Amino acid sequence: MGILLPKNRCNIGYQTGVSLVMTTTVTQQPPIVIAHRGASGYRPEHTLAAYKLAIEMGANFIEPDLVSTKDGILIARHENEMSQTTDVVNHPEFAHRRTTKIIDGEVKNGWFTEDFTLGEIKTLRAKERIPQIRPQNAVYDGKFDIPTFQEIIDLVKGKTIGIYPETKHPSYFQSIGLPLEEPLLEVLHGNGYRGDKAPIFIQSFEVNNLKQLSQKTDLPLVQLLNDTGKPYDVNFSYQDLATVAGLRDIAEYALAIGVNKNLVVPRDRNNKLLSPTSLINDAHGVNLLVHAWTFRNEDFFLPLDFQGNPQGEYELFFGLGIDGVFSDFPDIGLRTIEV
Ligand code: G3P
Ligand code: CA
Image (tube, rainbow, N blue to C red; front, side):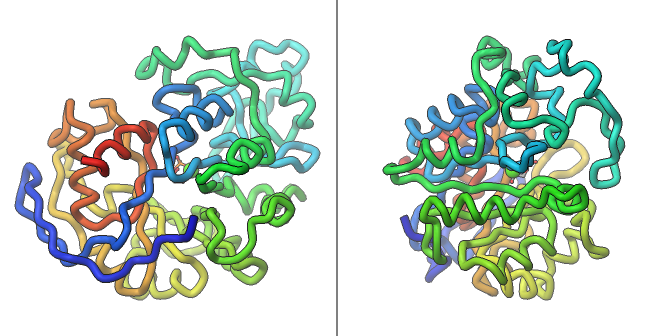
């Protein structure tokens, strides 16, 4: 699978709840659907079961967030504190490992991946993060273990599907002598991922580890942008990065930006959509792809404009010329593209 670059685009118009929006561009190829933490709307996130289901659904990429174990093995978890998505609290043999740390400036209490060997982590079982919203997923609590990055790669071998790994807390892991980047490249190169056409995007909310990676690999890189705050490792904001000047800087080391949806279509304080920003066109103007996160079915996450109609949200973003969507429900994104 090659990497999709923004090419010539045609006019598309669509009607949102607020206004008719015209965009001047649309991708040459269909947008990609990235299974966010696997098909995490249907299975507990970051389990092989969630990734397998996403592959069966036809997702173009599966997305593992990566952290390190004590013995330097990359595993798929959204954060290094494990109590929200594993049964570690039910393991009395690990009770003494509970501790408090400051991770990226925030106080966190619990059990941390870097204090456990892979062998110990393999005794834990995954659980649903938001059982109150996804009770259908909680029935799988206790059934699946925590996968390594290598196990996820093994899952996609021989299949037409890309991987979209994210380095989580890279400065923190560097500071404790467990940098993520070296094992990441070692695993990827060892599995044949090389060059800018490889079916992979490597993403980070931080800036410097991406810049350093760009010196070490040709694999495509993605700068993540949130709608508030700043990357942990620099003194400028995500808003600064989303300016034309900021995007131009990103284009020096990355192929794409992965953005909070609100940076493309902001919401007002009543959760209603406002007019789209120029971010997609600005990014395309400096040859950056734009992938947006996170598309979810539940009304809890949807803007007022699309309550009960998650497909409408995809249609909106596809109409604006987005190049890819991170989705907990990849089947819905794919179905929208097919229509
Ligand atoms: O990596 C894109 C998107 O997944 C960022 O959000 O917090 O789910 O990793 P998060
Ligand atoms: Ca992620």
